[in-house]
Image (cartoon, rainbow, N blue to C red; front, side, top):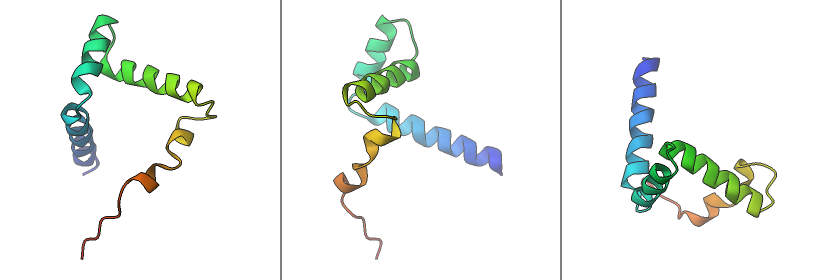
Length: 74
C-alpha cells in the first residue's frame, strides 16, 4: 500500500508541475544549463530564498495559505 501512495504522490507532483504555465520555460532553462528541471527549480528556490533574506525555504511560504481562498466542501 505504501508504494501505491508513493506512486500516486509522484503522479500528482508530475501533473502539477507539467500543467503549470511556467513549466515549459523552466524546462527550457534547465536544458540550456544541462540540468534536470528539478535541479533548475531547486536552484531557483534557493535564489528566491537568498533575495528575500529568508532563513529557510519553508519561510518563503509562511503567508501562502492567506493567498488561496478557502474551499468549502459543503
